[in-house]
Length: 168
Ligand code: FEO
Image (tube, rainbow, N blue to C red; front, side, top):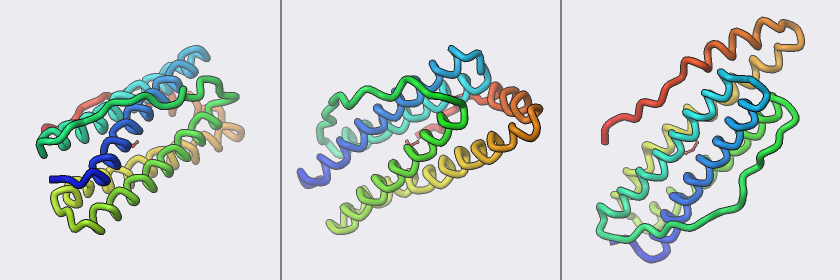
């Protein structure tokens, strides 16, 4: 049984993951409008992943016999000046998510709520991957000024990304 405080925090993170899905959907829309089709595909898949993260928390709350409470958040940013700015924004967003997951994990540890501590380990590992992915793309985007082929190679590479959630 979760305490009301920990349940609130889990619900808040679930809603933040839904918000993250919207943030990346808006980035996909920006990339599409600029004909950056591979980059748009990357963000569409990222948006799906975030929805999957939210639903993972939704199902966890349900499994514990408690209630998920869905709420809205702010509008995501829809306008960007460049691809680099878009990815820098995405990277900063992921750093915020990591901090939120750590805070949530700290709260679970403080209550010695072992099921939640164990559940959150997946998110901690996932954040390492996500930050590395965005950081890696930013490093490549910064090379575009020197080598415009980087843009086409990266666009083609990101066009291949697919969404394949693991079974729970
Ligand atoms: Fe669900 Fe990208 O954090």
